[in-house]
Image 1: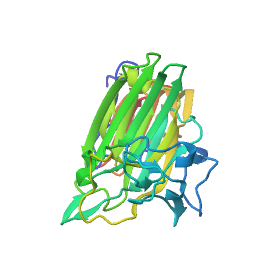
Image 2: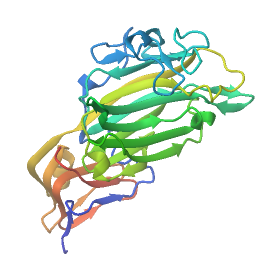
Image 3: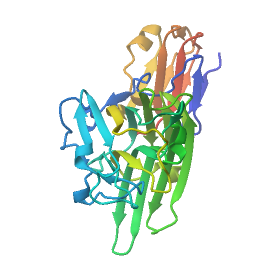
Length: 352
């Protein structure tokens, strides 16, 4: 049989025969590893202030972002295994934002040390049923990363990845996931912007969901509940500075109003934030000749991967989910079988 060679420096080859494919998320892709030092399960009785800065109006975090938000330290707490970002109002914020006095909560990592990897949050957003209809109007629950650098006259670098950055007006039915990328280096203006979104079939206050982004030097992919819905492979957007992580509950300004019947407090609840990196073994060439080799394969990004030597065969089981990542090439010699129900991914992955 003529060998099939996939040169992943030129193009990618992806093959899946599963009707329930989740693609290359840590749930299925064993090349990812959890970075526990940069993740948070929000267990315990307080926010880990070694990892997080709590947004607080007296510290200068007043009236920014959504325009109708005053962040208060006491509105970000941890209890029952959840990060709870609470919205109170009106009349709670000491300094009115856009002539309003609502108070909300948020946190941000103290360091800009998050780079290429997989960012995932499991959360339930605020909202309620107003006259029988789902409503999240004015709420802007966000999950994003950012890096900024100023000189004496302007903002010269602004890099941002919005995993969820919905506006209070767009969140009217509490069903929109809004994503985007901002990139500016050295110009003081003219941001490069790329955006996309997803509409959930159910209101996002009705239960917990996964919000995630995979950021690599050659791709940026956004996920909702493990399913990809927006991808960007433009290196203008993927090559950016390391960034900090923000999780905060913003409110739209006074031009957008809550739906009738709202009660306070309202909560943005986060079960966990997890950050994964790829296991890198980029100087290694891997050769798999038998099903036993396939079963014992140690997943990581390799230089080259070869299946078979031109004779014999290798086969996945019908329940197998296998993702292989390599920098240079993936070659199949002989017969490779992926039966119905299995999931096979061959993914071009730079070694960074």
